[in-house]
Length: 330
Image 1 (cartoon, rainbow, N blue to C red):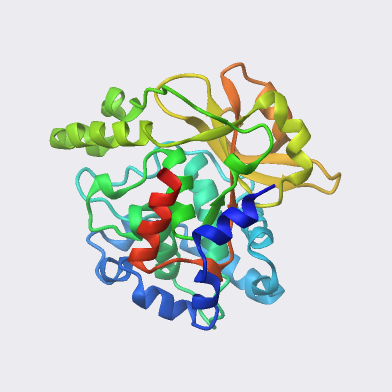
Image 2 (cartoon, rainbow, N blue to C red):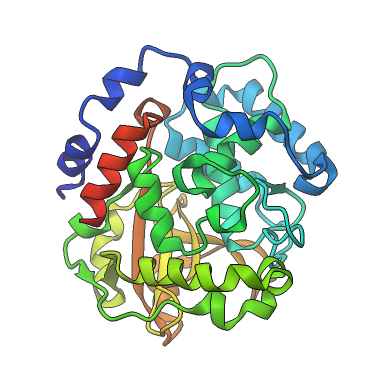
Protein backbone atom coordinates (compact mmCIF):
# COMPACT_ATOMS: atom_id res chain seq x y z
CA UNK A 1 0.00 0.00 0.00
CA UNK A 2 1.07 3.56 -0.76
CA UNK A 3 -1.42 5.24 1.55
CA UNK A 4 1.18 6.25 4.11
CA UNK A 5 3.42 7.99 1.61
CA UNK A 6 0.48 9.72 -0.05
CA UNK A 7 -0.75 11.04 3.28
CA UNK A 8 2.69 12.28 4.25
CA UNK A 9 2.97 14.17 0.98
CA UNK A 10 -0.44 15.81 1.35
CA UNK A 11 0.02 16.81 4.97
CA UNK A 12 3.76 17.36 5.10
CA UNK A 13 4.58 18.93 8.41
CA UNK A 14 1.01 18.94 9.75
CA UNK A 15 1.65 16.34 12.46
CA UNK A 16 4.66 18.26 13.70
CA UNK A 17 2.73 21.51 13.56
CA UNK A 18 -0.19 20.31 15.66
CA UNK A 19 1.36 17.74 17.97
CA UNK A 20 2.54 20.40 20.41
CA UNK A 21 -0.77 22.25 20.73
CA UNK A 22 -3.93 21.36 22.58
CA UNK A 23 -7.17 20.40 20.90
CA UNK A 24 -8.76 23.55 22.35
CA UNK A 25 -6.17 25.64 20.52
CA UNK A 26 -6.94 23.79 17.30
CA UNK A 27 -10.57 24.73 17.55
CA UNK A 28 -9.73 28.30 18.52
CA UNK A 29 -8.07 28.53 15.12
CA UNK A 30 -10.78 26.66 13.24
CA UNK A 31 -13.22 28.79 11.29
CA UNK A 32 -16.13 26.72 12.52
CA UNK A 33 -15.74 27.85 16.12
CA UNK A 34 -17.31 31.25 15.51
CA UNK A 35 -20.45 29.65 14.14
CA UNK A 36 -20.54 27.26 17.09
CA UNK A 37 -20.58 30.11 19.60
CA UNK A 38 -24.18 30.95 18.74
CA UNK A 39 -26.37 28.17 17.44
CA UNK A 40 -29.44 29.51 15.57
CA UNK A 41 -31.59 26.48 16.50
CA UNK A 42 -32.44 25.40 20.07
CA UNK A 43 -30.41 22.65 21.70
CA UNK A 44 -33.55 20.51 21.96
CA UNK A 45 -33.65 20.45 18.15
CA UNK A 46 -29.97 19.93 17.39
CA UNK A 47 -28.99 17.53 20.19
CA UNK A 48 -31.03 14.46 21.14
CA UNK A 49 -29.99 11.73 23.54
CA UNK A 50 -28.07 13.70 26.17
CA UNK A 51 -28.47 10.96 28.79
CA UNK A 52 -26.83 8.44 26.44
CA UNK A 53 -24.11 10.98 25.69
CA UNK A 54 -23.34 11.33 29.41
CA UNK A 55 -23.33 7.55 29.87
CA UNK A 56 -20.84 7.04 27.03
CA UNK A 57 -18.60 9.80 28.36
CA UNK A 58 -18.61 8.33 31.87
CA UNK A 59 -17.71 4.89 30.55
CA UNK A 60 -14.98 6.29 28.32
CA UNK A 61 -13.40 8.18 31.21
CA UNK A 62 -13.62 5.23 33.58
CA UNK A 63 -12.02 2.88 31.04
CA UNK A 64 -9.53 5.50 29.80
CA UNK A 65 -10.43 5.29 26.12
CA UNK A 66 -8.25 8.34 25.59
CA UNK A 67 -5.24 5.99 25.67
CA UNK A 68 -6.55 4.01 22.70
CA UNK A 69 -5.69 4.78 19.06
CA UNK A 70 -8.53 6.57 17.32
CA UNK A 71 -9.70 3.54 15.33
CA UNK A 72 -10.23 1.56 18.55
CA UNK A 73 -12.01 4.52 20.18
CA UNK A 74 -14.34 4.66 17.19
CA UNK A 75 -15.35 1.03 17.65
CA UNK A 76 -15.82 1.55 21.39
CA UNK A 77 -18.21 4.41 20.59
CA UNK A 78 -19.90 2.45 17.80
CA UNK A 79 -20.72 -0.43 20.14
CA UNK A 80 -22.37 2.00 22.53
CA UNK A 81 -24.79 2.69 19.65
CA UNK A 82 -25.24 -1.01 18.80
CA UNK A 83 -28.91 -1.94 18.66
CA UNK A 84 -30.24 1.60 18.49
CA UNK A 85 -33.19 2.01 16.11
CA UNK A 86 -32.78 3.03 12.48
CA UNK A 87 -34.30 6.43 11.75
CA UNK A 88 -34.24 7.93 8.27
CA UNK A 89 -33.48 11.56 7.37
CA UNK A 90 -32.03 12.39 10.78
CA UNK A 91 -30.08 15.32 9.29
CA UNK A 92 -33.21 17.09 8.02
CA UNK A 93 -33.99 18.94 11.24
CA UNK A 94 -35.48 22.25 10.05
CA UNK A 95 -37.24 23.81 7.07
CA UNK A 96 -34.72 26.60 6.55
CA UNK A 97 -31.75 26.75 8.96
CA UNK A 98 -28.90 24.27 8.63
CA UNK A 99 -27.01 23.34 11.80
CA UNK A 100 -24.66 20.68 13.14
CA UNK A 101 -26.82 18.14 14.94
CA UNK A 102 -26.60 14.92 16.93
CA UNK A 103 -29.24 12.27 17.51
CA UNK A 104 -28.18 9.47 19.84
CA UNK A 105 -31.70 8.04 20.01
CA UNK A 106 -32.15 7.07 16.37
CA UNK A 107 -29.58 6.76 13.59
CA UNK A 108 -29.33 6.42 9.85
CA UNK A 109 -26.23 5.06 8.15
CA UNK A 110 -24.55 8.48 7.85
CA UNK A 111 -25.15 9.62 11.42
CA UNK A 112 -24.04 6.24 12.80
CA UNK A 113 -20.53 6.40 11.35
CA UNK A 114 -20.29 10.18 11.75
CA UNK A 115 -21.27 10.24 15.42
CA UNK A 116 -19.00 7.28 16.22
CA UNK A 117 -16.12 9.22 14.64
CA UNK A 118 -17.14 12.50 16.29
CA UNK A 119 -17.34 10.92 19.75
CA UNK A 120 -13.96 9.24 19.24
CA UNK A 121 -12.36 12.53 18.22
CA UNK A 122 -13.94 14.38 21.14
CA UNK A 123 -12.83 11.73 23.63
CA UNK A 124 -9.28 12.00 22.36
CA UNK A 125 -9.06 15.36 24.11
CA UNK A 126 -8.00 15.23 27.74
CA UNK A 127 -10.78 17.03 29.60
CA UNK A 128 -12.41 16.57 33.00
CA UNK A 129 -15.86 17.24 31.54
CA UNK A 130 -17.41 17.00 28.08
CA UNK A 131 -20.51 18.84 26.89
CA UNK A 132 -22.87 18.32 23.93
CA UNK A 133 -21.27 21.37 22.36
CA UNK A 134 -17.92 19.53 22.27
CA UNK A 135 -19.48 16.82 20.12
CA UNK A 136 -21.35 19.33 17.95
CA UNK A 137 -18.05 21.05 17.15
CA UNK A 138 -16.57 17.75 16.01
CA UNK A 139 -19.63 17.03 13.88
CA UNK A 140 -19.40 20.49 12.35
CA UNK A 141 -15.75 19.99 11.50
CA UNK A 142 -16.33 16.77 9.55
CA UNK A 143 -19.84 17.34 8.13
CA UNK A 144 -19.29 20.68 6.39
CA UNK A 145 -16.88 21.86 3.70
CA UNK A 146 -13.90 23.46 5.35
CA UNK A 147 -15.45 22.61 8.74
CA UNK A 148 -17.74 25.64 8.53
CA UNK A 149 -21.50 26.01 8.93
CA UNK A 150 -23.21 29.40 8.90
CA UNK A 151 -26.74 28.03 8.54
CA UNK A 152 -26.68 27.39 4.78
CA UNK A 153 -27.88 23.95 3.68
CA UNK A 154 -25.45 23.94 0.75
CA UNK A 155 -22.46 24.05 3.11
CA UNK A 156 -23.15 20.47 4.16
CA UNK A 157 -21.39 17.60 2.38
CA UNK A 158 -24.31 15.65 0.92
CA UNK A 159 -22.46 12.96 -1.04
CA UNK A 160 -20.24 10.44 0.75
CA UNK A 161 -17.57 10.37 -1.97
CA UNK A 162 -17.01 14.08 -1.41
CA UNK A 163 -16.88 13.48 2.35
CA UNK A 164 -13.88 11.17 1.91
CA UNK A 165 -12.01 13.74 -0.18
CA UNK A 166 -12.96 16.72 2.01
CA UNK A 167 -11.97 15.02 5.24
CA UNK A 168 -8.72 13.78 3.74
CA UNK A 169 -7.88 17.41 2.94
CA UNK A 170 -8.58 18.37 6.56
CA UNK A 171 -6.60 15.49 8.01
CA UNK A 172 -9.44 13.67 9.75
CA UNK A 173 -9.72 10.61 7.47
CA UNK A 174 -7.22 9.21 4.98
CA UNK A 175 -8.93 8.38 1.67
CA UNK A 176 -6.82 5.28 1.06
CA UNK A 177 -8.95 3.72 -1.70
CA UNK A 178 -6.88 4.86 -4.71
CA UNK A 179 -3.79 3.24 -3.19
CA UNK A 180 -5.34 -0.17 -2.53
CA UNK A 181 -4.62 -3.00 -4.93
CA UNK A 182 -7.32 -3.37 -7.55
CA UNK A 183 -8.69 0.15 -7.19
CA UNK A 184 -10.57 1.53 -10.19
CA UNK A 185 -11.86 5.00 -10.93
CA UNK A 186 -15.58 5.51 -11.45
CA UNK A 187 -16.20 7.26 -14.77
CA UNK A 188 -19.23 9.03 -16.27
CA UNK A 189 -21.35 8.80 -13.15
CA UNK A 190 -24.45 11.01 -13.10
CA UNK A 191 -24.82 12.62 -9.67
CA UNK A 192 -28.43 13.71 -9.27
CA UNK A 193 -30.10 12.11 -6.26
CA UNK A 194 -30.65 15.32 -4.30
CA UNK A 195 -32.19 17.27 -7.17
CA UNK A 196 -34.29 14.39 -8.48
CA UNK A 197 -35.60 13.43 -5.03
CA UNK A 198 -35.85 17.00 -3.72
CA UNK A 199 -39.32 16.37 -2.25
CA UNK A 200 -37.69 13.97 0.25
CA UNK A 201 -35.45 16.68 1.71
CA UNK A 202 -37.08 19.34 3.90
CA UNK A 203 -34.65 22.08 2.96
CA UNK A 204 -34.95 21.53 -0.79
CA UNK A 205 -38.71 21.13 -0.58
CA UNK A 206 -39.22 24.35 1.38
CA UNK A 207 -36.51 26.41 -0.35
CA UNK A 208 -36.82 25.97 -4.12
CA UNK A 209 -34.04 28.54 -4.67
CA UNK A 210 -31.57 25.94 -3.34
CA UNK A 211 -32.25 23.41 -6.09
CA UNK A 212 -30.29 25.11 -8.88
CA UNK A 213 -27.13 25.59 -6.78
CA UNK A 214 -27.53 22.01 -5.53
CA UNK A 215 -27.38 20.88 -9.14
CA UNK A 216 -24.12 22.86 -9.51
CA UNK A 217 -22.78 21.02 -6.47
CA UNK A 218 -23.76 17.68 -7.99
CA UNK A 219 -21.98 18.56 -11.23
CA UNK A 220 -18.85 19.44 -9.25
CA UNK A 221 -19.01 16.15 -7.32
CA UNK A 222 -19.49 14.23 -10.58
CA UNK A 223 -16.18 15.65 -11.82
CA UNK A 224 -14.23 14.42 -8.78
CA UNK A 225 -11.78 11.51 -9.19
CA UNK A 226 -13.60 8.84 -7.17
CA UNK A 227 -12.12 5.34 -6.85
CA UNK A 228 -13.57 2.11 -5.53
CA UNK A 229 -12.56 -1.52 -4.98
CA UNK A 230 -14.73 -3.88 -7.07
CA UNK A 231 -16.49 -6.37 -4.80
CA UNK A 232 -14.76 -9.30 -6.49
CA UNK A 233 -11.47 -7.99 -5.09
CA UNK A 234 -12.62 -7.06 -1.58
CA UNK A 235 -12.12 -10.46 0.13
CA UNK A 236 -8.41 -10.39 -0.70
CA UNK A 237 -8.09 -6.96 0.95
CA UNK A 238 -9.98 -7.78 4.13
CA UNK A 239 -6.80 -8.60 6.11
CA UNK A 240 -5.64 -5.00 5.51
CA UNK A 241 -8.81 -3.40 6.90
CA UNK A 242 -8.80 -2.05 10.44
CA UNK A 243 -11.34 -1.46 13.16
CA UNK A 244 -13.02 1.88 12.58
CA UNK A 245 -12.32 2.11 8.84
CA UNK A 246 -15.17 4.00 7.18
CA UNK A 247 -16.64 1.92 4.35
CA UNK A 248 -18.74 3.48 1.62
CA UNK A 249 -20.82 0.99 -0.35
CA UNK A 250 -20.26 1.89 -3.99
CA UNK A 251 -23.34 1.44 -6.14
CA UNK A 252 -23.71 0.40 -9.76
CA UNK A 253 -26.49 2.90 -10.31
CA UNK A 254 -26.49 6.54 -11.31
CA UNK A 255 -27.64 9.17 -8.81
CA UNK A 256 -24.64 8.96 -6.49
CA UNK A 257 -21.40 7.09 -5.95
CA UNK A 258 -22.49 5.34 -2.75
CA UNK A 259 -25.75 3.87 -1.53
CA UNK A 260 -24.75 3.12 2.07
CA UNK A 261 -21.98 3.56 4.65
CA UNK A 262 -20.73 1.88 7.81
CA UNK A 263 -17.63 0.87 9.75
CA UNK A 264 -15.32 -2.11 9.89
CA UNK A 265 -15.56 -4.08 13.13
CA UNK A 266 -13.06 -6.91 13.41
CA UNK A 267 -14.75 -9.36 15.76
CA UNK A 268 -13.17 -11.98 18.01
CA UNK A 269 -13.28 -14.54 15.20
CA UNK A 270 -10.96 -12.28 13.17
CA UNK A 271 -13.58 -11.40 10.55
CA UNK A 272 -13.69 -7.82 9.22
CA UNK A 273 -17.43 -7.29 9.58
CA UNK A 274 -19.61 -4.45 8.29
CA UNK A 275 -21.18 -2.53 11.19
CA UNK A 276 -23.95 -0.18 10.13
CA UNK A 277 -27.33 1.34 10.82
CA UNK A 278 -29.46 -1.03 8.76
CA UNK A 279 -32.76 -0.14 7.16
CA UNK A 280 -33.48 -3.87 6.70
CA UNK A 281 -32.82 -4.80 10.34
CA UNK A 282 -34.20 -1.44 11.54
CA UNK A 283 -31.29 -0.96 13.95
CA UNK A 284 -27.50 -0.74 14.26
CA UNK A 285 -26.04 -4.19 13.64
CA UNK A 286 -22.74 -6.03 13.19
CA UNK A 287 -23.32 -7.77 9.87
CA UNK A 288 -21.49 -10.23 7.62
CA UNK A 289 -17.90 -9.79 6.51
CA UNK A 290 -17.64 -6.76 4.25
CA UNK A 291 -17.11 -9.01 1.21
CA UNK A 292 -20.11 -11.12 2.23
CA UNK A 293 -22.26 -8.04 2.67
CA UNK A 294 -21.27 -6.66 -0.74
CA UNK A 295 -22.00 -9.98 -2.46
CA UNK A 296 -25.46 -10.09 -0.88
CA UNK A 297 -26.81 -7.36 -3.17
CA UNK A 298 -26.56 -7.10 -6.97
CA UNK A 299 -26.63 -3.31 -6.86
CA UNK A 300 -23.41 -3.16 -4.82
CA UNK A 301 -20.38 -2.49 -7.00
CA UNK A 302 -17.72 -2.53 -4.28
CA UNK A 303 -16.31 -0.44 -1.46
CA UNK A 304 -14.68 2.93 -0.82
CA UNK A 305 -12.39 3.11 2.23
CA UNK A 306 -11.40 5.94 4.51
CA UNK A 307 -9.09 5.46 7.50
CA UNK A 308 -9.64 7.89 10.42
CA UNK A 309 -6.55 9.81 11.46
CA UNK A 310 -5.26 10.80 14.89
CA UNK A 311 -6.11 14.28 16.16
CA UNK A 312 -2.50 15.39 15.72
CA UNK A 313 -2.98 15.22 11.93
CA UNK A 314 -5.94 17.60 11.85
CA UNK A 315 -5.46 20.49 9.43
CA UNK A 316 -7.09 23.81 10.36
CA UNK A 317 -4.87 26.14 8.34
CA UNK A 318 -6.97 27.36 5.41
CA UNK A 319 -4.09 27.52 2.93
CA UNK A 320 -2.95 24.00 3.80
CA UNK A 321 -6.49 22.68 3.54
CA UNK A 322 -6.96 24.26 0.11
CA UNK A 323 -3.61 22.91 -1.10
CA UNK A 324 -4.52 19.41 0.08
CA UNK A 325 -7.92 19.65 -1.61
CA UNK A 326 -6.37 20.75 -4.89
CA UNK A 327 -3.90 17.85 -4.77
CA UNK A 328 -6.72 15.36 -4.22
CA UNK A 329 -9.08 16.68 -6.87
CA UNK A 330 -6.40 17.52 -9.42
